[in-house]
Image (cartoon, rainbow, N blue to C red; front, side, top):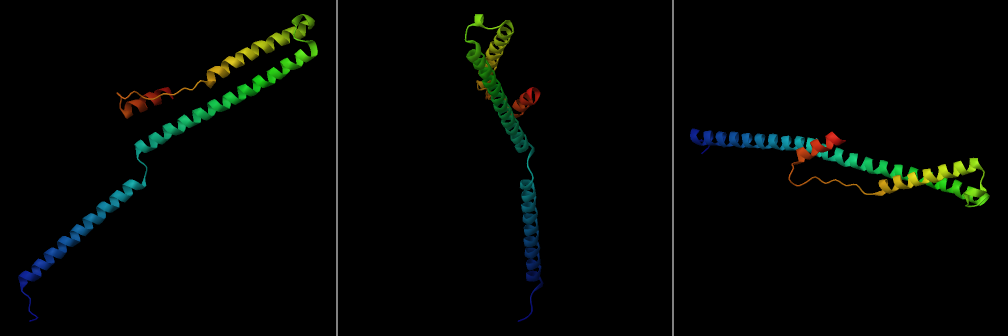
Length: 143
């Protein structure tokens, strides 16, 4: 009863070797997929870089706009002070004050134009005909 034939023993060895090989290959493939997912892919990093660059540009634009608005407000206050002191007519002002008043008005107009230009939204979406790689080339050449 305790005697096994050589054929059965050989089949069990083949089956166990096959199972061991299958488990080893499955484990190696699983480890490779885990390693592959652990680190960022180049495309993912590039997309994040583009989004970050766009966010930085928007923040810079908002900061520039805020600085211009603050300058405009300060100039407007100076104009109001001159108007309170000398009136709105240029004839009632001394020559030096007239020059300052004109300069302030010119600066105010220029600032208002800059603010108007900066306030316009600027967006760029790539045409659907180009690939993502071509889009990246366009962005990198402009940025």
